[in-house]
Length: 237
Image (cartoon, rainbow, N blue to C red; front, side, top):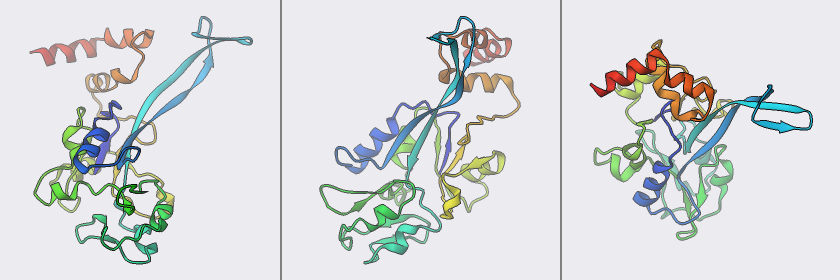
């Protein structure tokens, strides 16, 4: 899976779709969206933030980070399972066989991404399966089909013509916690906070307006820029 953070608006529709499709119990999540802020507070005359030492303004942007099981190529959860209930399928999916799972929680503790939980109903380990029941029928995961920004892209990385392969070849991508050596198979565009795009000002302006305070001067300047006006005009034709 490739997750394009330039397009995620943090609406949590993926979270809701996942719970609905997979019957995820209340209080548990197979996928979720964390919201982070990147930037800093700097001194500025007439800034919005006033303290005893002066006025400041926020030079930050919001980064929404969808998280889920990374279906690692080197999954530590598989290695530690004492009854081999957690396994890696030939196509790369990392799954849990609830008939074998004893609910010991060893795999939950072994996951460096916090992507596993003990299902309070079945009392077995649970996590994202990429909606295996759907992809085995040629369908896309529920989180992919429900994403309003089309930020999630799912496909065969071994197929050079697939959309995921093309995105990974065209963009600089990152994975979460690469230092763990798990070789995650969920790739992010813009995970390091550098929301880079193609060298097209119109595209860049249209992508980021949602992440900016609409009451800010920067937003008003952005909305009034020639590139943004031409892009909007093109979209209305």
